[in-house]
Length: 580
Image (cartoon, rainbow, N blue to C red; front, side, top):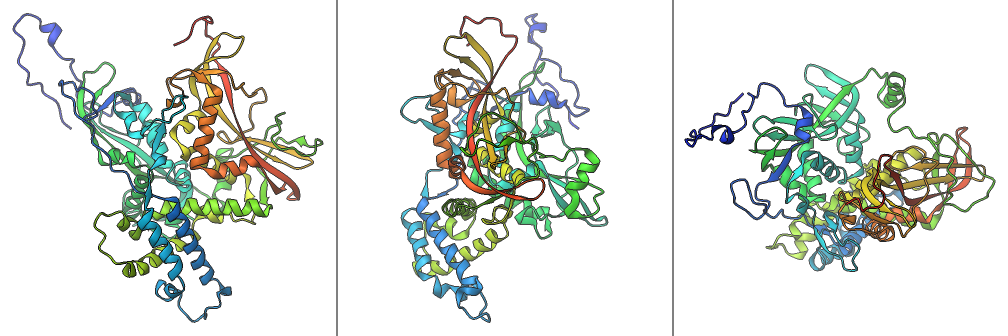
């Protein structure tokens, strides 16, 4: 516990009251979380003039290399060849150990293709960490996402962006942020069954504002597991075997920084100036930290934990229902009737061409998210590459074999196995992650942003604009609709807005200036096409077998559609003027 003592000399001109600083209360207790969330921060060195009158350029955050399309395609061919060689149908003697050394002679051509791609087309500009500020103009103007924090900002605005930067690293990480069934072991306590949640905290070390703020709840968190705890979960590939937290967290942070380099500055810690309500400016620091929260349960067995949670706490998290919406994205028999419950649905994709495209897209995603951590890929980015081509080939084969092992244990791939049934809830969550990882602007739109809106023949309105992504599962007998973001049926009164509606928002870089909704949608579709191509496969629709509540399979189809909904404010009272 420390106290700040002012060393300033007392004024002598009789203006004592006007020059005395505000008196800070001794820091005898944790500050209220809402006080921290409402605090204004400025990163020291952000290029904004400081309270001392100086201005410094913001330090550049080195961007992690992003594998080029050529590298990913070459690595995908090598991974496929290794998988074929390891199969019983490969023709290799079952007595031959399937090690990188024994497989290397059969992989020379594919390995050289990877090497050539690394040497000629090593990386592409890291698009995923950039935001589009075109504002509707024909030319694209892109700036790094870190530029968001070059000025003054609220902690409550920084929190969701940091969570987005963490969650987009993988679908598994997004699930971990929400909480997954797991077991925890601590010496002297044995194994416990429960729910483990990845907790992202902002450690603030500012006089009068020092605390560890849980970014998901904006509450002070003091119940994290210690580093000498062991975790195990069948739903996370990195800890399907018992894993110490002390070794798990550094790898997780490395993965996050590789995906979203601009969060690195917050993991490293940043000096800040801070202004809280009813306080003076203070200097201090903030740092992003990760930990785990564990809630033990009385579930009878580990696989049945989710069912036990429903009995103890009511409706299980993520439970979904359906919607009798009149909008129909799939042109099928008109005799189908809406269903009120889709939580039981299972899907089997049946169209061969669609399955092949979907499989390729999923595999490319997995390779792209893991290749940056491979030693050979990182070595290829070093300026002084002294290794010869012949010495690199065994290293490439070894990295590829390790990558195959990782892909085979990934729940993201096994759950989406091409010809196996997929629970609709799991599919919906996967699609939500696909939207979320595309850009922070998409995340904002799915949650809803405050806008000024002008429709033809109507007055200016203020309200909330939200991206509505709906998944339609349909058989000739029944129809199910699901809002991807809420995992609930869409509201029956929601109808799409016209393309010529004018929207403007101070909350999103995509519509800072007034623009037609058609331009916003075009920008959205372009972003999704570049970053999440699997969503376009679902938008095109595909044939599927759908299992109903009676576990009977029916031929049908599934399709994703997107649009915008607007919820106007009820108390807006100046309809003739632009809200500003």
